[in-house]
Length: 89
Image (cartoon, rainbow, N blue to C red):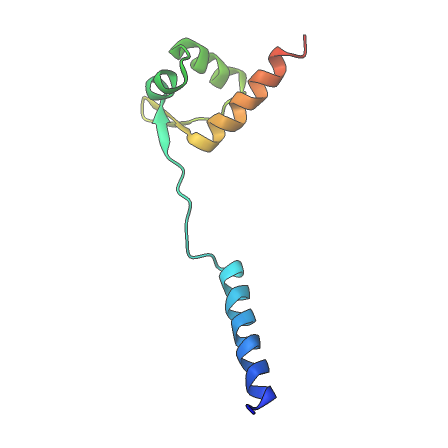
């Protein structure tokens, strides 16, 4: 028979490794940034609508020089907010 303490030590080291992975994830999820024109094409919206949503604060965007870039996650979050506002009337 094998030593029960060795089995416990192996299991504890596995648990420790899993906890370290949870604490310090190795994969980084990088959000893509799109221009107003790209977002409009991808979602079938007009550029003016997207610019209005940005001005109203419904979608957060970053301005780099003259370009306006929108994170994909921020757009999805803002778009769900816009859709919910449509049906509140």
